[in-house]
Image (cartoon, rainbow, N blue to C red; front, side, top):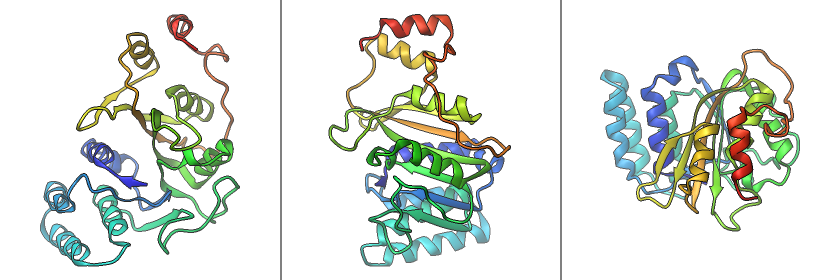
Length: 261
């Protein structure tokens, strides 16, 4: 699992919008410890430092980046990814769960209930849950590990990624989880990975179904989603799909019937 250009661009956009000020992140947990994919040269991080920081803070960050880039060893690409997160969220505590991560990562099977003893301001799922069979437990774990009012980030396959994991995800999966748990949608994006560079388009229920009807969905795509957990703590609720729960507007329910299934 790795941070690639679409993730990098989307997280920079998130910071430009000031989401890190609305939802301050002092602690973060990754479900799946990310490394640096390499389609963006790590030296580009100097430009991000200059864009968001100045003075002594910028100098300190530049020095830290130089030290990371001069380092050797297999953990280097993980250190670069963590440094990028620091530029975006300025976190103070980082944790991860990954059976194949570095020594930083806790070795939990995400098919089972996870007990980490605390909650986090930010929890990420960047290409992890599709490899976990117990979907209910995975998303419950994510809910339980996120503080009330905290941020959850997903980046998962939508179409294609053939035999990559157990699952691909449709937008209704996320819309209905949000509905059931009162998450606020900060943004949901359809990422067309057949384009170079990959193109991201903001979507809602209606626009995605319209794209499907008009044949505008590619055969290799992903979904990136940003949600804020309700500020009132409540147990994780299992969603019922919106169509069967009679929660879709009539025009969308009618469109749903036009799609092949």
